[in-house]
Image (cartoon, rainbow, N blue to C red; front, side, top):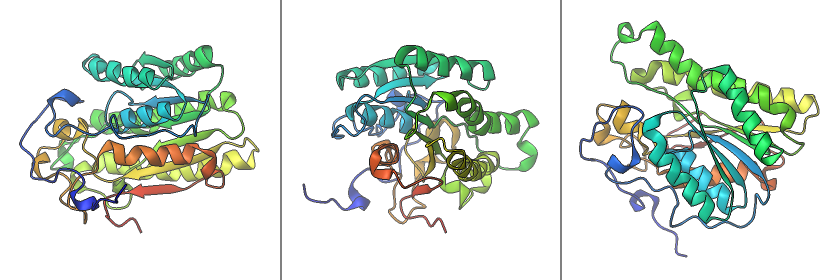
Length: 293
């Protein structure tokens, strides 16, 4: 296949105004995000593995679920809202079409007990957890710091960081040697958007947490690798539902457009596979050329 100029591979801004209520729905987006439904080809890299993916109803999580299912993994699809049911069911259908098993788990993972239930569900269904993808996230745009309530600040850190901690704590004993934990951070860990103050701070914390946890787990002899992926602006339902000026979303990248979920999922597949056996404590940026040093 001939390589394609990345600048022209997917739609560029400006996009039409399309505000939604959080967390947003894929069916209302124009252009529709590409999750790799028609393009991702598996090669058996994750045969007979089990993957838990949070936020797997839409966006990056959905693309990861489709890709890992086509690589042979069974998928636990974790999501939160009733409004996300349609997207989650669609993800499950793509997983099944790939010949893999899909388990849907809907709950507010800010409650620690629900995180334990998610881990227990995966173990009951599949006996083990080979891959844990901590991908679910929350953001909201604020013009002034005075607009950020304590409730909003705490919610952002609970969804983005505390859930990650709970799930890893409960999952650790079920992850075999050679297992993989992959956390989603953001280009905001390097180049923070001032209007996403709580979100950017939480994503920087995730990167630190990933690095220290990776070292800790290997020193303990667990054989579990912990890494992170730092996406740039990616076209998902979270964007029109949380960013007022989403019409120009992605134009701050050298590539000149937002990324698509399908462009991010292969990185998670790589990190979960044997090809990445010597990689732990790393963050892989996928930012459309935005600098991360």
